[in-house]
Image (cartoon, rainbow, N blue to C red):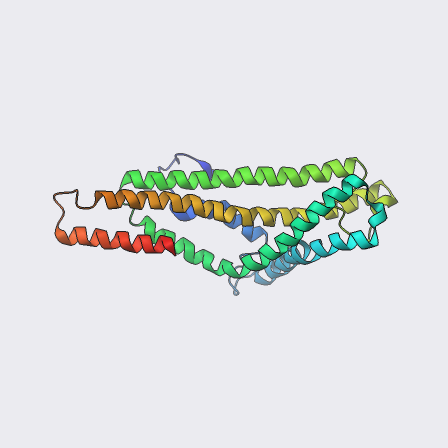
Length: 258
């Protein structure tokens, strides 16, 4: 099933581990070229070419072309188009900075999922695993909500602008002038939609990452607190077992702080 990571209860009775909270986010980052496959993969170089195109379009070309259009084609802007474009131009510049900061940090992404696997192994009670499962569902639902909102913005801006005779964000395109006719208008608008859509999708991934991490952190801190409260409450446990559980709680708290 395409949306199986949104199911409250799976047909097999499987409870999702914490790392599945990043399932849709990880797929989105792969689409953007942020998570390349192994170098011995058949598609490695094709993927790296795609990565170069996406990063160049959304990080380098977009802010440069938007500010460049104010110099080259300022007279072509209506007041409404200009205000929309200025807002998008500053957002594009901020996005470029965020991507530059984000990409080098993605090497820690796999390590973060391994850390979650370690903490999940401490969740031995069924109630704890159900709590983690619900958190995973919440994270993936949050991704879908963000996806709808961000995609709706990009698509509605594209269609509204094209049907009213202008381009979505006023990006400078050297090889096509949208004022040359209907065909040129739609070519220019669609080209802007691709470039701007890549930027919007990148912004979505960056905005979602801390949100999902926050949900997971809150859930595991809650479960850790409950485990601490249960320490030394089982009379049949030996002192060694109680000490081991205490040590595990300390280790998990340290992992969560990392």
